[in-house]
Length: 505
Image 1 (spheres, one colour):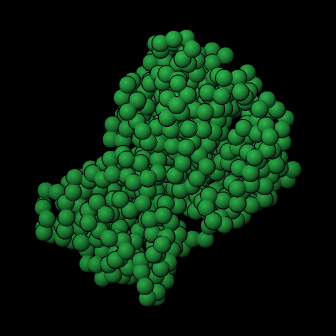
Image 2 (cartoon, helix red, strand yellow; image 1 turned 90 degrees about the horizontal axis):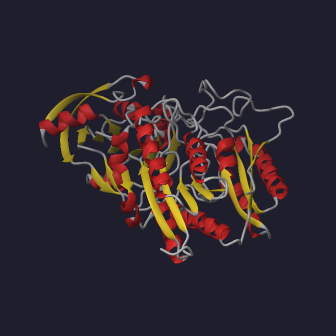
Image 3 (cartoon, one colour; image 1 turned 30 degrees about the horizontal axis):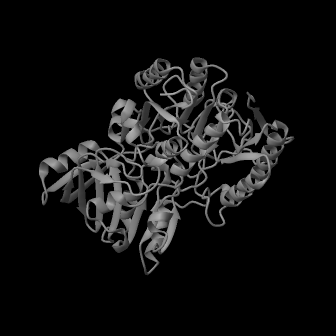
């Protein structure tokens, strides 16, 4: 390898965590999703890592693969899991020195037992290893919680631009290109983040159509056409963390002009504050939503149980929607997912065609409800494997674990061992269930249901149910996030965005 070929280290710990509930993430979570070491990373051709590697090869850089640990959302990482992964990542980096740059495909809303700002801690540790002069660029989810440590120790932070997330690959490309341009002397990033205390769910957080977040995203990205503006990112902070200083806003990178970066970010953060009321959703009780759905002739009617969103870190084990359906519409063809390893095991042992009586739900995260006793017929069994088509896990095999379809009257309950991230409707279809033919479909994601069912859904009702990923955080009691913040405080006197300034190296 010649000196003229830049060596670029690539590695990270990538997941999203919920500090209000959910099941702690251990090393087995990463093993079920994606855990690659060393040269195994070089085979990745999709997602953010695939995008990074594409640019590095095109620009004749030498990727130095470290560790890439990616898992679906859950509770915080266990201390042991985090220590193992972080230790290995940093050891591999230290052993690979010297490097000319570092790429970190991070999420931005991860936490571990005893560590609230996982990404900030990793970026700072990487900086300490490589020194002040080596460029460090990180990519982030647009739901990241941006902290002082992240801004202070990275040269550039670039976020995904779409929600539902469809641009992981291109964001990886943008991050890698930024680093390559820095090494070539084509740019000198000056970074600033401005955020306001708006903590809202993602129901109106689409980047498509007329959602308020979409309108603000278009305004944010328009600045990239201005001379000297290298990158703009808009953040709707993950509302299920509980950390000091959480807020939503904009991060701007200019070519050496930090005053301009601050000016643009400040303006966008104020605009974010102005649209705060539009980001709050209207919700229905499950009973009212089912009654309204029964009054509609067509289907499917979507019951969006966002409070049990495994994509936001919930356990996926709520039966609130199921209880409402069995009470008011037991004969209606309905599809409901529930993560319950014990119930799945009982069905697996009983076999197809057997009648079983189960205590179903609220077994993984018991804080949000009581199990529901149901009797039904085991209609189908599965090993729980499916493949994601699109999104951040494009091409990755999902693992629901041993699973079963239980028929309870007209309701088909998909009982899984593990909760898995909902992208489209891969889980239902993997066990032969067709949402288009159902009267009711329970979706446990606040946004991706639009892709899966938006073209043919007869109606959509966002539910107000107990759980760690509620549609609104009006009733959440944070321990570390201090008031004032919206929506608890609708007006804040003398409100000014908080400005985080990067270091121009």
